[in-house]
Length: 384
View 1: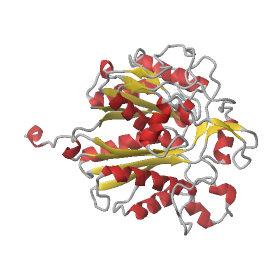
View 2: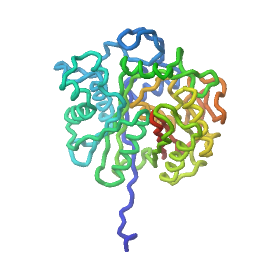
View 3: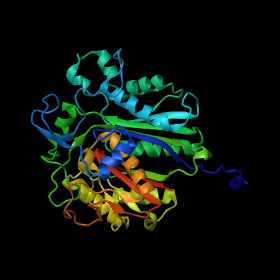
View 4: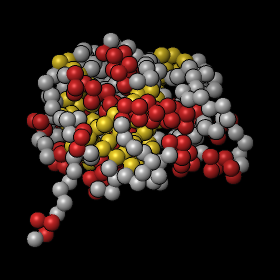
């Protein structure tokens, strides 16, 4: 009796998306730029964010994203608004009802205000991610309280998994998931303290990799369980784990990320052989790429075509998982895996199949991985 009364878990479809980055203001523009081999990472000399020149992917200083004559929103919030608006134009969903939830992903939000504003109790509230989330929700007329995901560098992937899980419960019909970060001196100095920044365009998985580049950007994905979208790409499954190895250093074995990958496969009802390509985290730091290659090998995916987009976008923090998932959805639709910018020769112990040029694939599914400070790991699977 109990089996007969159980409600079937609904499929979760990708309805619309948007990317705003220094490479373009739409997902299509970004994909075209990447396919043409472009990178937004270059050397910047800006004392407001770093005392010395750094290689990063940054917007122009005067780029506004959204017209805000009353100066109600910060630069970070204007970027969020612009990306959500871009996705909603193609989404065809109603957001002012109880069936739609807003999910915000960011690692730092308005933290840069600490460098420019007077230290007051009001500032403490203004830099809170909950303040930004409520402002964005009110701007668009979301009825439900927004959900905030801020878990280091897996935030974007975790936000997608959270959206999938919420929709599977039936509590919501639609989820608007947006992630963004803007770079400040606070952020740059943090990565510099770890000696994690490269002095050139980064080289994921390459033998001469020496660190990452930071990047600015926003990504929005709209998910829905409505059957009218049943021909769209689906979010098939996802999982998270934590290796509890070190506050900043990843696991040396990769077993914990492999655990998340295998659980994501199980959740999606897939096997390793079903995965057509991998969108890796691929930060180009010595330890992250080594760990990720270990995890991919443990999961039996070492021969699957793989790319990292960090050489094109830099590490966009809370937006990374969203931006890279959106690009990979386009790759799935067009049957091409984009190259890993900067990659020339294998630099990890367990070699993985890194694409160094546009690679045609006949794929039905792909997996997106992510790892971050504190030992967090995540994997999400998309498919037809």
